[in-house]
Image (cartoon, rainbow, N blue to C red; front, side, top):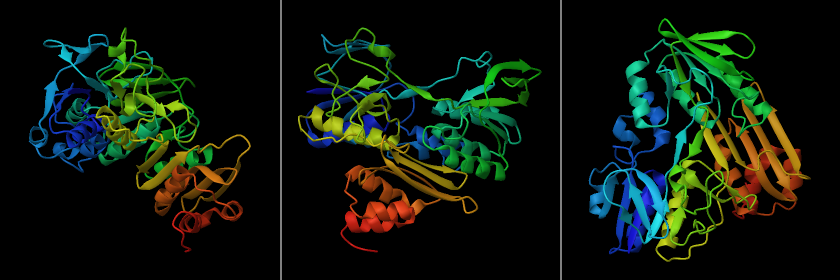
Length: 415
């Protein structure tokens, strides 16, 4: 049997390794678009900050890792998929036949439709090519505007501060991390960043960018301007599904997959940022573009590709982020559910915040700032859907008892 995997990110790599464990005889081919060893995009900010060398971004350090596993890496681009002939059309060379196909094509950085965003002084921060360009063109003390303060933006922010830049963050939403944090938490994070010397402008829209005299004039909707040497765009990503046109594979925000990570077309699976799969909290199909989900998707898809019916309960919406030393996290339905209960405790001076969301006596969502010891506990309670019983009332009165509730209800011990 020939397995073809399109994409060499965490989902594709883990899928290939899992398939090899399941069978020593099947052919496994990874089609990789970028001319680098398989790497983690989430490690790129650490490369920019100087915390790791380039090989520190690689998913597998041993240069012979895939050769030893008899996994073939082909540097190429998939242009089209023929589901009737079970072939993929490559940019270079003949079509490639598959018996089972995994689409782990990931996502690409997007730029908002703003005049002037095609300037060479505007950078993405998503690929190793992007990182090389930034390191060669951006210098310490340059004036840089970071466009976007979502999850990716705040990861990039950490690297840009390490590069010792004159940094301004511009975010369209009224608070930072709008898709993983409420207004109270976003306000706390903004204050933390400003205390570290970063200028943060939330609720601010960029309407045009003009290049003048080797610098950028950034026009804002309120009529003011910002002068900068560079813009780093972290305005979001889009799943790579362009090669599916005319393929009969169902897509929405991403490639629609069931609880086996299988598409509507037999023998074709999808995993990682490109897959719109089961959400553990809602039962709906969602794209969860985070590396832990990609890794799990790759493993589960490989099990089913090899004929092993391994159950998959769906992915959990979760984000854990370090923003200039302040740890923030969100899990599940952090914004609550209709008819649910909520409790929160906030220590602004101490930069600590905890918010819990309940449905009946289930913990269904949570936010935390500055509480690193709670990360595993919050995820565990939400993911296992354990009944809290009397603990719910205690937590509504005092959310800080969450560790005690976890020890009692999940591990059967009391703190």
